[in-house]
Length: 209
Image 1 (spheres, rainbow, N blue to C red):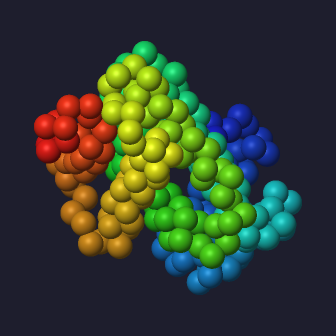
Image 2 (tube, helix red, strand yellow):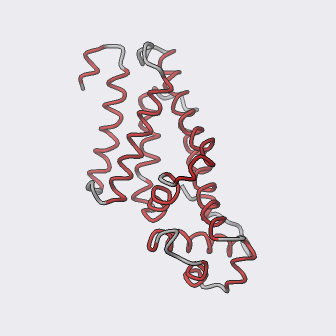
């Protein structure tokens, strides 16, 4: 996550990346509605005018943070999807991508959860969100076709259950209602995969994991 925000080339792109990183820190600390463009410029150590050279408004900065972060998430998800590993391992890979983002960049996760995912403006981003569901659904469908998962479960609904569980765990960490140490993060990954894949197992006894 954040590859596009961190792997900028040089010159103007470096300044743009600097502003985006500063915006993530300010949004995480003050909230999107509680900060000003000047706060972002000050955090980045640039003049207000330079910020407006790259972004027309605070809203555009947030939109860019979401778009570039989500593009990285989808790219990583597609890499996992295209492997030859069993479906269970691919779902585990998706869980690791999303949940370990909290350890790598908690400020970014705070911004995505508080200001984007829970935003009333989510409808504008619904196609990007659905792309993640679609990748998970394809993994489940392939697992069904290969006999790893039972075929009598709607794969689209299962993808929503899986993704929704991961998002709620991230929300719990953001709100401080769930413990978030390394052991707890590993346990969260295992729990979601065990419950979902157990429920999808052809052997009904395996569903009792």
